[in-house]
Length: 250
Image: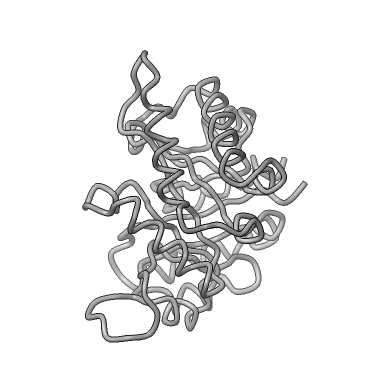
């Protein structure tokens, strides 16, 4: 079995380079723990150089987004070549907060193709806005997966993907998804991936969970069948992040 995956999404935090440096150095104190799993840190772009130096040897650098075009003139864009110059190994694509700003499945698809072409691992985020007794949220997830992965045809490319399930209604809430519901969704996502890529390729795609992950619920969520976590708020708390990593290593 491959190592569990832990991806810290710092979003637009902390508020200064000095605090970003301090946060990343605090993680270094537990470098031996983070080496036991596959750890990624996704800081704001402005902090990447400093964070990359501080986490070298025990964690990988990730980006919170990626532009879908190669080298060119795109004011304000952060293209794959720029991300690679920092040492970015993985890019979070289609995060619910990006989708809330208007990012479509079609744009997500282009970003996934750009990441694959550049050698950056795409972490595709999917998640429903709300749940209902009729089960329409399953069809919502199916459509997100189908359209977001539209441009991924080769099975060897499918093997380079990661999928993060992040139910939007659970993000930032005190209670994460019920583990039984999570288990059902993981089975469903795996079925959809099998329909797209075939069983052999689908089985190689790790499924991780994001949406109010913390040390109090991580074990139950892990027992539901996830391959790792994408914490947001907890990733900014060195002790909470350490405790989640410990659970993954147990």
